[in-house]
Image 1 (tube, rainbow, N blue to C red):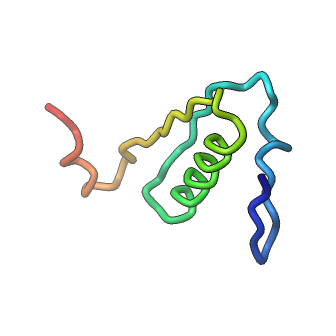
Image 2: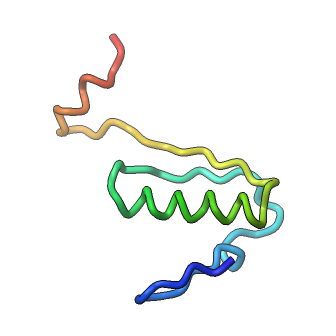
Amino acid sequence: MIFKNSQQDIDFSKYIPLNFTKIGIKLSGGADSAIVCYMLAKYVIAERSDITIYPITGIAEGKEYQKFLQKG
């Protein structure tokens, strides 16, 4: 599956070896990482149903607005 865009076409099959079945992807909460995760999910559904996607995020130091997410 090739994702065409105005800057560079993206073909996940070139970057994900066939023996990889678990992929972690960092989601910052921004549009860029969300779009890449969405494209990865579409690729997995269409071509690699053996892959499990693990979304990863975290609480960054210095970003006080994220503290409400912490328990305790």
